[in-house]
View 1 (cartoon, rainbow, N blue to C red):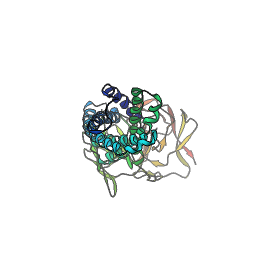
View 2: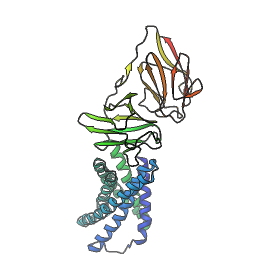
View 3: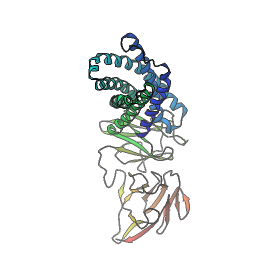
View 4: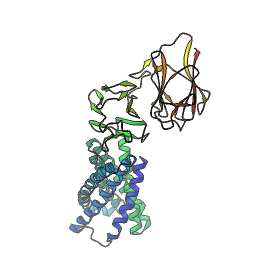
Length: 403
């Protein structure tokens, strides 16, 4: 959310720099001339703000083609929408002319309405660029609110400055900041399902599912892009939203959900998807998480022995974690069974511990800093009692103790 707010404020400053040389403070405030002038001004502001907010959302991808594709679409949508918004805003501004008799308060109301219209158009532009009508609708609502708030602040901040150029700089910045923050806030409040990258490139990045079918893969225009791993196909998997929930379909093969092959599977909150070297977490809002999520089994325990991971070094030194389900996901993200959120060297999705054929198998989940058993880096290892496990800055020993 902060990223879009900062991007919006920067866009407001850029728009000011681009438009200020052409501002005529003695120009007519009504009639056809004002209508044309306002349409041009909003078109330029709209394309700058739409482009800036869209690029800010895509910067993590670091893919020129992806950024250019969405950026160009946002520029077109922002310019056309901004021109229409400027025309409509000027008409509304003129219609509300009687409010001028109320002084500054009347001016604030008229300005707020005009900038709210621009904010709505700009907010919808990034969703339109991504081909998501739901995201466009959320952006429209957020932009309407944010643009209105920015317009409201325009005169409150600018009026005391008593200088046209400086006041417009403050006003444009407020509109950009308000639009960016409100669009991001609306997306956050309205999201129902999303995917978090636990390990792999762009670790921690969150992708909100706003389309009926979400594409996952190495393609630069994928909805959930997984770059840097050639074992990932351009279209590797899809998540389809339907009446029965969210259906995961493995289009290229080799994907797993909770460490089990999953050609097709209805996802539950907290499910871990593995594609190539990437670990992803599927999340839904308002869904209760069971003690034993789908795809996990409760482990049989002997009457006298309990497997535990005893932490000997790191932020959790002195603690012990019971091993009671399989698989156990280990990582920094709160969705893991063993969440080590106080260890910054642990990846969000670092490793898994699985009970298979009477043995405990530790697997690295594509972590950044690696998984070690007895000081040797491993991708997969069958554990024995007393083995030392290191993930990030946390060291643990597998022991079997009396209950």
